[in-house]
Image (cartoon, rainbow, N blue to C red):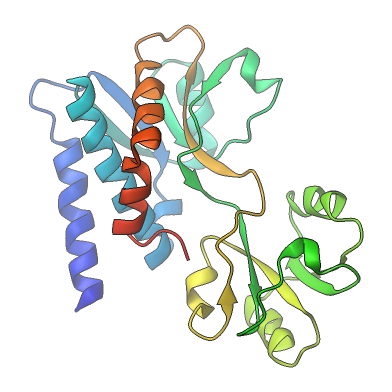
Length: 235
């Protein structure tokens, strides 16, 4: 029943954002495949829909969400076919020469998962075995915590089996997957990496940058946190 209600809310929130009376003023592209992976990303999409609704009211402008693919987002922005992207593209000195990034809006990194009653944080696991996915962020994490004995996993079921047997002390689990096991384990709410979804636009696009001002205001007012709580985004 709860699942049906959630998907109904997401369905109507999407169309309330996309239904533009006088034509779209600002177009925001996002990776639609990411937000359809599972119940957690569905919640994240509902958060995005309602965030855009709030931005429309505050700005007095129409905003259209444009479903796209991850590979095409930057190209759409470069070619000015859309005004902004909503992406977890890492902020870097090189990219900042061309693009402007809003404040972080939605965390998309890793959470530390330990056995129940074990509330040790990552910095307290020196010389302990911690498993993580072998991907581009693994190098950053390993460099940031050189005293931790990191190992890799490919299958989360096998990783959680090792945790249950105390073959490791903790796991680093992507945001997209943490809910699957949160009832059986301790998912710590602290953000581990700098990976966040943000609004991103070209440096020359002054009108799109108005969105950033409103996002900053909504963060300061607590509106962003209220939306995260409403859609149960965080552990």
